[in-house]
Image 1 (cartoon, rainbow, N blue to C red):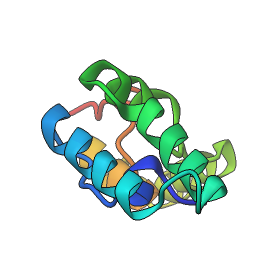
Image 2: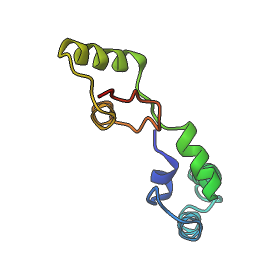
Image 3: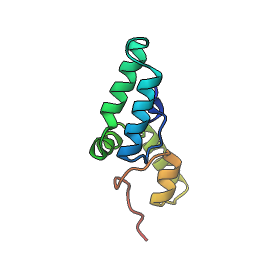
Length: 107
């Protein structure tokens, strides 16, 4: 499944003006009269990330979080090695930014 950014062919750090320009270009390329399904997909994607606040909400609520089993496996492996990973190592191994939900390493 494509993200709104992929549908609109923009980078995730796009600003409002560039996003609107990309949206209008996509609408010209896929007019609703000729491509109703594509137009609906483009319209929904734009509505999801139209403003800076919308993009922040999308990022917070639509990111892929690691499964609990993946977190447990990583912690068990670290315990077996008798070494807790740093926040950066933990996030790198899980492949996402946990935004403050990682355990801090005690020194």
